[in-house]
Amino acid sequence: LQRFQVATVVDWANWDAMVRFVQDQNPEFQQENLGVKTLDDLAIEALLVFDPSGKMVWGQAIAPAEVRFTPPDEHLLALGRGDHPLLTFDEEHPVRTGLIPVEAGSLRLAVAAPILTSEREGPVRGAVVMVTRLGPDELASLVAGLEPTFVDAARWPAFPSAARVDVQVVDGQELRAHAFLRDMEGRPLSVLEVRLPRDIHRQGVRTIFLFGIVLLCALGLFSGLYFLALRRMVVARVE
Image (cartoon, rainbow, N blue to C red; front, side, top):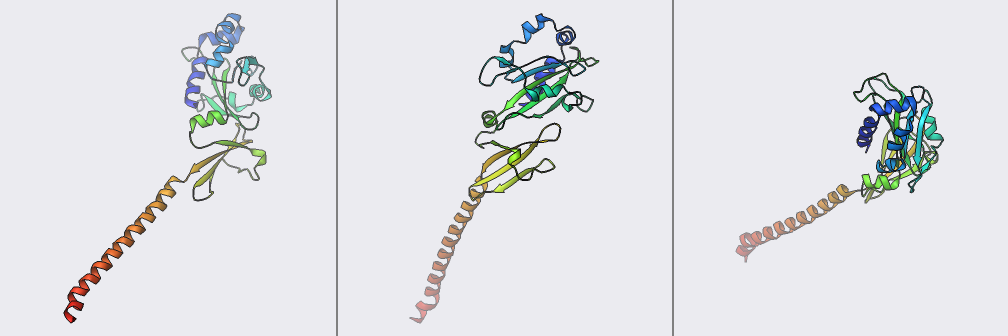
């Protein structure tokens, strides 16, 4: 998902027509390329265009479960802040990606690329940002069978200072993994919980059980043969 979105954002940002649009906001470009159907076809929640100063020259979001434009919310507008890491590009980070907040139970993946000419020549004329919502339905389609859910970070008793994944044993049938997620500015954002069936554990228990049965059968067979041989060699002679 992230690789696909990065390729799409770079394609839009490295475009002579986009360079001209940032400079003059010509209505022809907007009419031809920035319709609500375009965002819906791209399967994104929001498309934002910033000039070099961080000013948003165009930005719209799509209302959830509807195909209509809605104004960007405060979290999307905050991306244009001058010191926001999403719009800070360098040789090490020619494209920026990161998580941004949304209501409880979902996350947003934001991808930003600098606006350059179609030949990818500078200077940087601004940035194109595409935002995709990652809710339970989207996550379930990516990790089928694992029942992913989000837990509000505020409800977590001790949010780790560093990114990590904790795995807990629930019982003999299930594991529970928690990934602690932060936004691009390092603030606790959410906890992703995934339930994992303990298939290997169950297979191991079954293998041990079967091995025990085979061992008991082999021991019983060996004992029977031993006593039969003993009867023939010793007891039969005595009789």
